[in-house]
Image (cartoon, one colour):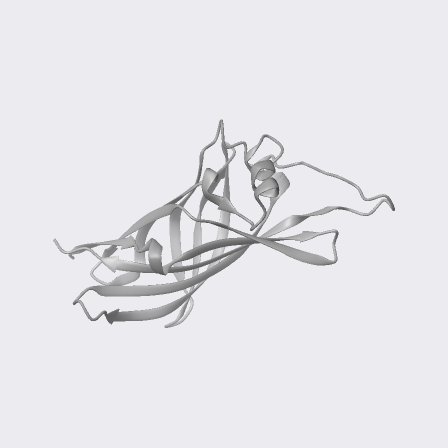
Length: 178
């Protein structure tokens, strides 16, 4: 079987997260600098071995003060842990369009097994002759599992920040020519 290499196109991909704020609304953020690749047998993503990394210092929530706080030791600790990584361990094909991606997420030096749901968008040729494959991924983690235990209570004793973090990604891979 022929091994095919794919690389994430960051100009046509997004890596986002969402977390409850004051338990009444959601705050969204994204990583602006990231990279990833996958190796498959032929064009079969069920066999993929993939790796992804995001630069913590590229975090953006559209609020510079909050972004700086997220980079410090209360949250991501970018000085000591500048990268967030994910490596696949197993991909389970549910049907033609849906997969469960089992892998290891490493954040703040803590590695945990997580499962992401993935929807396969298909494979197509772009106008310049490149072969592209698209996926929509989502999952959830508990931030405390990764050592992000920052907690603050409101004046009325409510929780200021939720523990569950939703992970969302829209990625487009470009097939590499041998």
